Length: 399
Image (cartoon, rainbow, N blue to C red; front, side):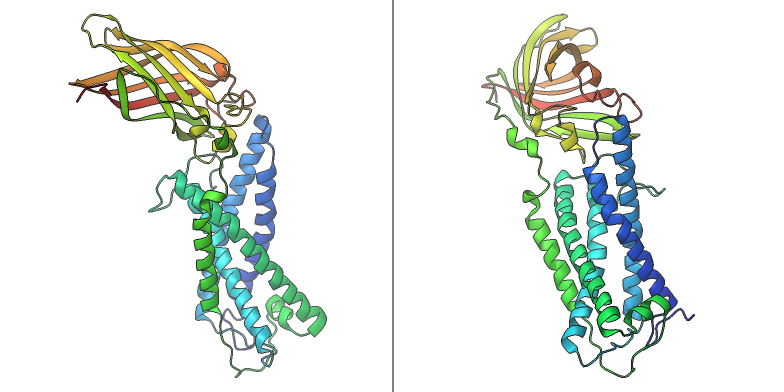
């Protein structure tokens, strides 16, 4: 069986590409929806959901690479002539559907791959080449945009696939011609010499349209439902005003580090530098829990089994600022998800006149706050959650 196409038949390589991709699509689409809908109420369900998503992503990468090979081969090889060249509208429609299908086979897996690379989270791709992509930053905004493109482009894929299958059925059942046999067995058919125009420009325009629509609609899809419940935190009266800062967390999920941060929090700080050990001030921090972003697992993290952001929209940390032998500590109580636990946060402090730079770090045990009780295996989700704070503050009325 010849490898290359002829004017009247598909070669073995084109047919291998076609049927491998077809098999991959038939598995990938339902696998993605099953993974999306799978519950994650306990460790076993979470492990299954992770495996389903990993399988979906790995298969998507394989289909993407196959699609690139199929498109290249379609460009450099002759396309077998249409069996009904007199039906120009039908031929043009078939060409457009083919190239729309090719475009979707690139956009769908590539957008999902970029989303995966742009964020932290569970479900790694099963291969030895890492989880990142060149030139793709770790960016929740980019991940959200690509999630939207992925969501929209999947319907382009489904639509093109339905039309493609419908056309094949029509040729087999109504026209009773050799179109399907030509792809299934490599059977030659048709009269060479007829004109056969392509529809690549139409497909490229369609692909660009999907990308533009996806980018423009990013704010409308895959938004976190919990974010609408985010409390509006009032500015805190403070002797020191935070000019810039980050409040972030870090944990290990399925063997991979996942980092996130709270976008909205306030701090009321009273502090007077002193050389002698003892109390140097107080701090009262209020945190908007729904403002958390935690990679691709943000929605799950804010759900009832974890932070329960709808029921417990704020957390607070009230502490004394203590001058200790090797630096400073914030010694107080963290109120989170209805639980109160003592917490000590060691921190370093650099003073330059009325400007202070502070970096602190401590480790919490999520089990003390009833977070992720359904995940009792630390191999799936670490018990330890590292809290990091980095801020610059100026004394009120200072320069």
